[in-house]
Image (cartoon, rainbow, N blue to C red; front, side, top):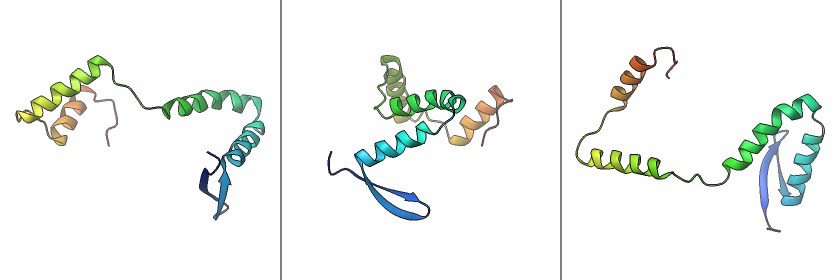
Length: 97
């Protein structure tokens, strides 16, 4: 991990930081937050950190995916347009793109 290098854009110039420098930079930015801002950002930070670990499917999710794949192999698939039309009909208050 000592050779870990990250390229990032700062003031339109590229800089190279090692892991210790990245941690220090993050600490400084967090330390500058007002208490109210920190409270708002805390859950976002935690969610972001937790999202970096791979998602594990539940048994039900895996079974649903397997079922959908088998249906697709049998030609029982829907087009994007069909799915969007059904979703718009079922959830008319949502703004679909």
